[in-house]
Length: 262
Image (tube, rainbow, N blue to C red; front, side, top):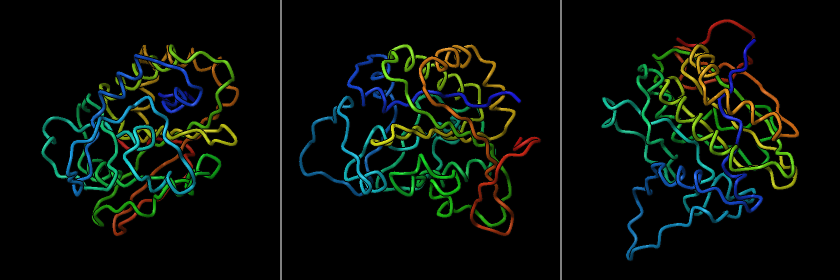
């Protein structure tokens, strides 16, 4: 079965080892990040330095005290016709891509809105089963909606001394390519566990066909070639995210074959 993960590199790792990558820094700065709606500062604040690595602990990873560029999920921006659709206002909203999806179906649009509240349960999420790592039970959709989505999980540990700049440039290009190609709803890139070095990245796709199609794109192929030499550990897992009519919540199930989504 073909690999269905488009992204192999984790943006926070560019900062963990103290390296600098101008291409990736530009990419981060070009992401849209809205301030909390209730925040009305009395005096202008200096722009947050995107090169500064925030301090994370068990509490701050799930309830940060300030917007953190390296923590939130990265949602693919909606197609132009959905630009005015209201989305949930959270204290620390997710990042959004500049590149927009070409299309999205109505139930995936509902999931996209729900994912504005997506977060890990605690700092040890990278070592937990996927169904227990994130707040799936808190994502609420309309009861009359029904659909499933394809999830790819990538657990990894960077190899000491691996070069950063080509990796992050390949990741940036592969990510933009995937959004343009369609189907990618969310890319969570997380941060490595400070003790084990393990990380968990995940993608949520409108369908498995979208994920497989991304595998054949040139930037994804280039990224895969660089990944093999850059990680001492990397494991792929695949899941089905399911919403059943008559229920308001979603559930994670292991992927055991067949098509997912459309």
